[in-house]
Image (cartoon, rainbow, N blue to C red; front, side, top):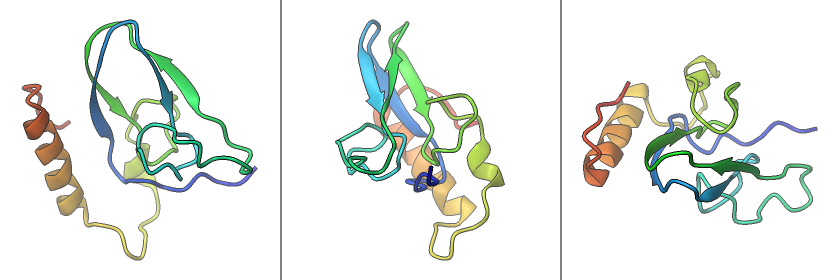
Length: 109
């Protein structure tokens, strides 16, 4: 099987609802990250389902290399740098902006 595309080198902070099921994109091709839009067709990848046990923020993996399934485990920090990726500082600014705009009162890890 081929490697998934790295959609983003930081997690996606998403506010989920208890009892809802979410289809996480495992291939990295979806235009609706971190969720599946069917772009995996013909790649051998399939979305992974995540059922929220409680409402609140979840940090979904953006790099598609997490060993913790659909949630971020920091694997993005160990990936080789991409030629045209954002710097770590720019990624953190984007992540902090996401958290602030969604007003969950959490600080980035």
